[in-house]
Length: 236
Image 1: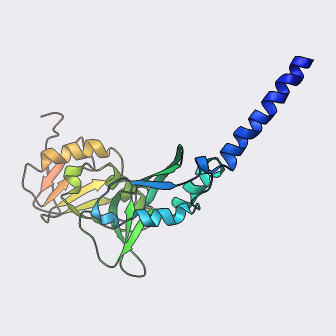
Image 2 (image 1 turned 135 degrees about the vertical axis):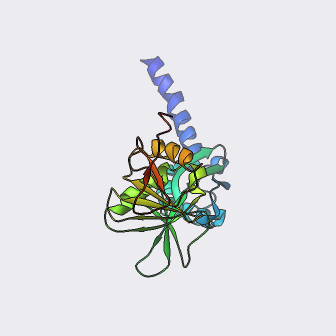
């Protein structure tokens, strides 16, 4: 019994000291907020460390143990440019905020004018009075938006650079408008990787229209109304 009492007499003050150091001592108090922001395309617009730090909103001198990383993450995540954020404590006195920016993939004309610059999830990164370089303009109706965004999301970089606009009125009639004036009938937002590979082969033939809506039996044509069959690269 005496040993237990002796142990408690030692441990209780020790725990109290440790608790005081962690929760009240200036030794482990916030001195620096380090913000690290991933790069993205210019179409996303600016995002400064000052904007992020304003939403971190933790007074200097606050003990690190009393800072809730999840609460800070929730505040920073309200910025429309932010796809994800992770907050960690770097002892003894630094809070590290890692911000992953959204990647713009399309410009959607807004009902009030201008364009909504959206990422692959359809989230609006920012609004712009004009279309911006590096992302295609998407003109859609109803369910066409979901299909168009799916196509843009899966589009390889080499193809995205060639696309000026995308149109769709349903889930099954996505059309790409290339910067050279050609038109690509893409169809639904499915099998996008296969369609892109087929289109890469088709583009070796100069044409006004390329059709990969059925990628197993693609076609090219200089006559918009009557496309001519073109052999699939898988069988050539």
